[in-house]
Image 1 (tube, one colour):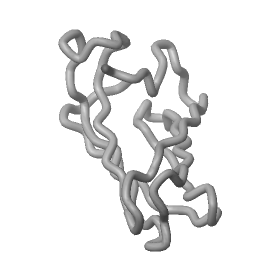
Image 2 (tube, one colour; image 1 turned 60 degrees about the vertical axis):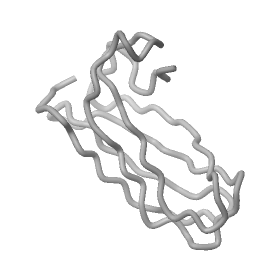
Image 3 (tube, one colour; image 1 turned 90 degrees about the vertical axis):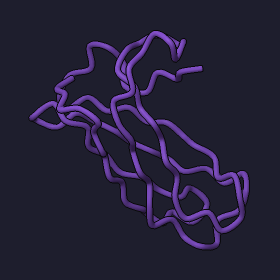
Image 4 (spheres, rainbow, N blue to C red; image 1 turned 180 degrees about the horizontal axis):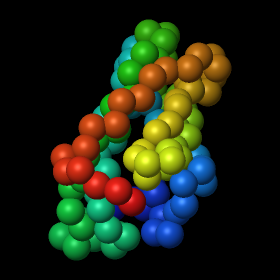
Length: 103
């Protein structure tokens, strides 16, 4: 199943916010694959890249939430920030693109 993270028609400066769960105690990062396309079916979209969330505290617990806030910068590229919700500690994100793409 493909989850729609950045909606079609999103404009530069618009923001989206989603929450992702920690799966294991002590997990300090999350890898989120993102795709081009707005279908819920993976066979109908193309892999576009990876959003790597890093720098979460080593005290994370299974079930904790991480808030991911994304936007399109003035060049149409994905930018964002993340935060471990229980501790309010901010992590870092790195957006890796498989293809040069402007949304």
